Amino acid sequence: MNSEEVLLFKTIFEQTPVSTQIFSPSGDTVMVNQAWEKLWKAPFSLVKSYNILKDKQLVETGTMPYIKKAFKGEVVTLPEIKYDPSLTVNIPGVVPYRWLSAKMYPIKNNIGEVTHVVLQHEDVTEKRESEEGRNRLAAIVESTQDAVISINNDGIITSWNKAAQQMYGYKATEAIGNSIYILIPDNLVKEEEQLLKSVREGKKLNIYETIRVKKNGEHILISLSISPIKDGHGKVIGASKIARDITAQKVYEKSIKESEERLRVALNAGQIGVWDWDINLNELKWTDKVYEIHDVDQKKFNVTYDTFKELIHPDDRDYTKKKITEALSGNEDFSAEFRIITPKGKVKWVATKAVITYDPTNKPQRMLGATLDITQQKQLEQDKSDFLSMASHELKTPLTSLKMFIDLLFRELDNGDQEKKKYFAKRIMDQASRLTELTNDLLDVSRIETGKLSLNIEKFSINELIEDTVEGIQATTKKHKIIIKNSDKVEVNADRYRIYQVLVNLLTNAVKYSPNGKLITIEIKKDESNVVVSVKDNGRGIAKEQHKRIFERLYQVTDPEEKTFPGLGLGLFISKEIVARHNGSIWLKSAKGKGATFYFSLPLT
Ligand code: ADP
Picture 1: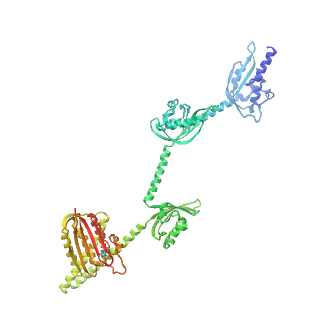
Picture 2: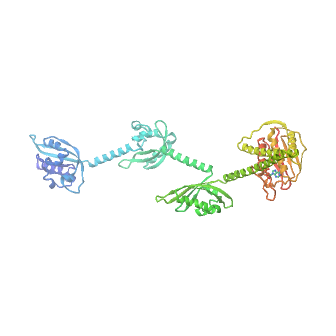
Picture 3: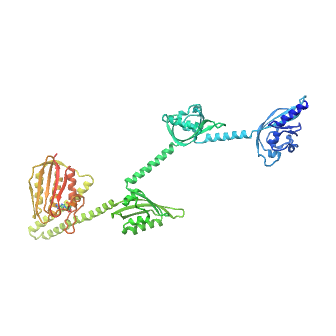
């Protein structure tokens, strides 16, 4: 080698980008190049005394046998190792470690002796790390529950993770190379084309919900995001799609919505209003129904605990307040029934129940309650108790007389005259009949209310029935004269006993409510389709405003100026039901003090 050639090789040695270190056959470092100094961030002077055959670390890492082979004359590729240059060259602050791939080869002379050993290192840290990163990413993609797939610009699937297989049912081998459109329902093809077009333009699509078809044809609901995949030059080469199956979530959301809806319907159907009182902030919230129950205008009424208290009936305010305080101080739930007065002055009964929530220090935080308008229910309870006391009063009157006449009869039994005995016996009969009537009325009401009033339809002459009834009623009164006039002869198909009951009721009322006697007139009139029977008296009459109500159950006209009449207020109610069951109707014409005429009609067919 001439000196020019030596210079040439030296320059190549110095300038080659591969770190190169040359050892003597005994293992001492004889030369390094610039690339070496760059890799190890150390000058040659530092490793002048470094003997590779004496490096303990190389023994520990198991690399020494390879090195020894090189010294014996073999070319060796060392396993890639994680090398800590700072340990070797003892320079603090340099890169803590490098991944190096290394090759060693011997230089031999003419007779095959090893004169030098060359060690060349390549720094593969970056290559290796990006590979690791890729592997890590791949592991994440494989293990995620989301389907992660990628496609190229032609819409051909290029990768397919495990979750995608599970979600869509296609194996990776089936999916990769296939078109993405295998997943798209027919009606969404246009949408997909549009999306892929904008992804190709480099746009990222945020999560949106859509539908996909599985291999087995089932449809699933997914939430999807799409991002473009770009090459090193920023050119879009495909797209990644990440999808999550939200079918179950949607079903869950739907069921929550449905149950909320059901609750709302139930609350509305049950006429229940809901309120929520934040005790600390003193904020009270009402649902529409609560406003409705209190008859206040939602837009105008500023609901607070104080304005609510104003609506409570003054007589019930203390009671309600006490109930609230009790509930707030104990761990009991709140439950109360009280009256309110609406701004229009109407009194209503409400029932309220509430639960209280407490903060961690056990201080009441919130009261969540439900309110129900129970006015009708309370009225019914009142009616029932009125009815009971009236019924017992009504039953007691004939019973007392009954006992009295039986007592009198007993005293007369041995000595008394026959006329007296007959008289007492007759009065006993009268009172017993009265009792029978009353109990029959009560039974009928219960039959009507349970829908068990049955009819025994037969054909009979209404004229005959009326004549018989009049005869019976006339016998009970001497003050009244009952006459039948202008009558058409009519046969009806009806329940004879029930129609008799209606007649008895109208006639006894006519007698009862015209205490001063006089005439009672019955007329029987026939037209094409109906027979109309009227009973006219000349008694106290009924004021117009009462006309509708007297047919209600238990309704009696009470006039403080007038004397009270015995009765339960059931007769007209029962009559109306009987006539209605025959498809007829009942009505009246009357004015206060002018007598009354009651009419009922029955269809002829
Ligand atoms: P009762 O007679 O037992 O009270 P009814 O149902 O028969 O019950 O009548 C209801 C109410 O209608 C009576 O309380 C009475 O005030 C009124 N009424 C019924 N018939 C007449 C009538 N002919 N004249 C005046 N008032 C009547």
